[in-house]
Length: 287
Image (cartoon, one colour):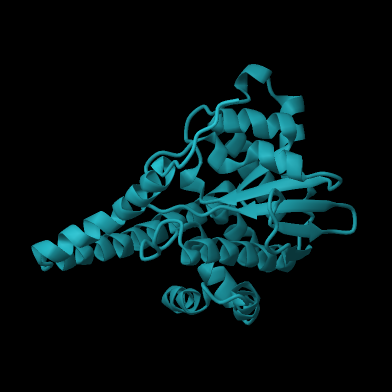
């Protein structure tokens, strides 16, 4: 299914109605297909060029998948579409509303920073809604002390993972998820402020809440975390194979072709053109 999704995104990424077609594509997924593919959302295919239409469409794909999954868990969720400076998903329950965003990363990317996790932005985007949620691969969150946990607790922004989401989906039930959305408020009351940045504190409480909701033991949740590890290794090998094939492809290039590709990659012609434009001064008047 992953390869089918990648191929589909290539086919619609530059289509003006691409997002609409993507929604229809994902909405045809059965529950089993959603469950089988939710972990993959967080891993951006290496085959998509950086900052390309395909990369942006994959981000939208993750949002649509998140909306579908939240609906399966008992909320009524929708993707808000192409809107700037706002969350991408809106979900509603009888008692509350929640804005959400799904994060996806390349496994080949090294440095990540606080802004990648949009904690402050999600707090701002909450507006008149009750809660805000960020879903990301569990292993992409900082594993040690980090300001994102302090921000999440202080602002009551829920940091969630695809692993926890998969765990709940596989229970086959609809849950009262309010304790998940209130984890920041809960930790604020039960913990010392000096510990707010502690990743173990945050995820320990999240595991406790999720297991409590599902009426399962921690060992059951750990099995899903191990499933995430195995799936990540599989997708990592997918990425390695892609780049190894690229190396072989580049090794076969002629010198002229390789130089041309290097010039294009660094956008050198565009840079020269821009410099010429900048210095093409006919008249300069200083007031």
